[in-house]
Amino acid sequence: MTRRIRFILAALAACIAAPLAFPGEAQASKCKAGTIFNPITKVRWNCIFPITIGGVRIGTHDKLDKALDAQSASKPLCACRKGLEVWFGVKVSYWSPNRMIDVVTEPGCMMALGVDLMATGGKLQGSQSSISDGTNTRKMFAQLHYYISPVWAMLDMFTDLPCLQNDGFDVALITEVLPTWQSATLGAIIQPEAILFGNPAAGLACMADSAAAAAGKVIDPLFWCMGSWGATYPIAGDIHFGDSVEAWAGLAARGTFMMGRLGALTISSSDGCSFVPSPIWTKSRYKVQLMEPVQAGKCVNIGRPGALWTSGKHAPGEDNAQFMLFEKVICCAGLPVP
Image 1 (cartoon, rainbow, N blue to C red):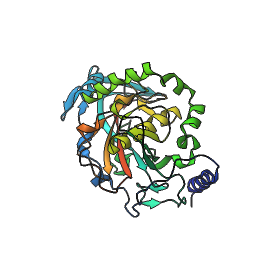
Image 2 (cartoon, helix red, strand yellow):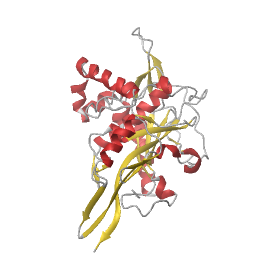
Image 3 (cartoon, rainbow, N blue to C red):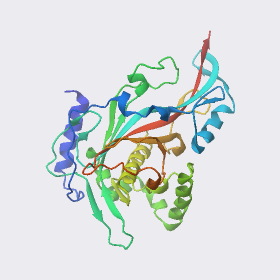
């Protein structure tokens, strides 16, 4: 057993024993064991399109792709320097499947690994409850697992691209060990800026983001909004919802935002030469694909209304979901010059 796994087990046991007010019990879905992630069959490979090479677009695109491709096509030639090495080439942009996210009601259910990490005795599990406010909405709570999964490297493809991430497969985050994920109040202690966005004015701004998401666009400056999926704050496992699949996607997006706040999120620079830290996410650089419990036919931009894509995606009795996160990569592909 590796040191990482021992740490995860110890931290999970500590959280179970801690006297915190965790969400109430729910009918958690049974974790499917023995189904290891298969990138060939689970990934929708048409999501990597459009690919832009030197300003020439390959494949179909939507409004979000068009705006991003315009950035990489405006200056198709590029030059980069790393230390003493200099290389010249052309800009290449594509959508890269390099992260996976589980949203599970059964704590410890590592869907990508096909294992149930450990039994929690009914603690930390997901829940759903109705809200008596006349809006006919409900509240969901679920745990989240964030994996570093560079699919291109796993399949040994395009390894000659200088900007291909090859960090190796790893479990970057499991929320069962984070007390702040279990309680929005605790989350506000380490993310005090959440108070700034918990007001009517900030909420009204999210209406514009929701309308843009429905049209296939994303408003990056409104980082505290996730379109029709809700708000990024509080960074916790509770989310209001009317559509279960949309709520899963909202929690997956919130987990991505949290990785940025933890300093573990990067995006490719506009010149295609490097990856830069992204403490505040750039929403337009990401789109998600539902892989479990039902494989989605396409990827969707952050915040896209569930009415446009979630139909038939919730199998009865299946409340554990798995997403592939695609990131827009801009790469300067060329030859080094001595």
